[in-house]
Image (cartoon, rainbow, N blue to C red):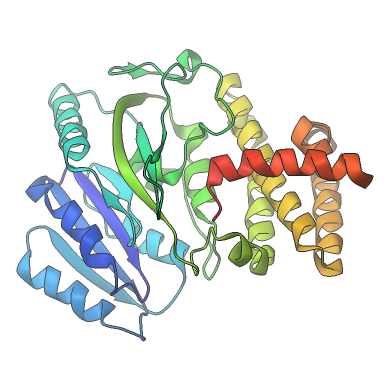
Length: 342
């Protein structure tokens, strides 16, 4: 059995995927690298995946599928994963070698001690083009370090220190057992990926190392502000799916108050991102979409609506006039820090 399965969703990624995969290979045979070619047609992504699989048959597996989008590629990776743990690394990102070795060493030690936490968390770096001092997102003072802990031992998560796909490694069986399913042809499903399994997580482990290098800088990147606005329908779709999950799984989500509070706070941020980007677009279509989103939340669950609408950031995206716009800008600044739009 492999210790860690790493899925690498690739779509026309020939220009940068080699750097990513090279950083993963240093894990050796403890690691299974699943390169998922998501129907690439414009470059040599498929051929590069096959070359790595042929050169490292004990480590790399190339999987080819019709284009289904990022979520579909993640699910294909998960469905083919044989490792005890599962990690997603996007094809333009990479892992820090020293942190990687500490992660694998810790996972191996815990496994030998018959202690298998549901989730491992580590730091990630915003590897933004042209920035010398890279921003590191860490969880010091929020999560206990170097030991297994539960939700009840977590402190308040600061705005900007949420658990994102970059910082999380899930136990593979937990992801499969919780019924995780990500929609096809939809961007921003990483929010669903990290959100839906949380109520199933009982034990965690935080390793304070700067593990994941999150590349920021391509004009066509999904977190580019202009690109996000152009895909507003997909952002709202994911937002609604998160709302549906909270409403349809109340008993499950409410089992642990700390987990529930965290999920509400994260949903507040995602809803704020949706609202502010629709405001920034300035189009009537997005103004109508914004109103429809809030009506959707209200129709689904009035208590959740009140919680989101009358939180500080929720109010800020709905106030009229100059004051409203100023508060919206403040909220947008917070969101930029969290999601590092470029």
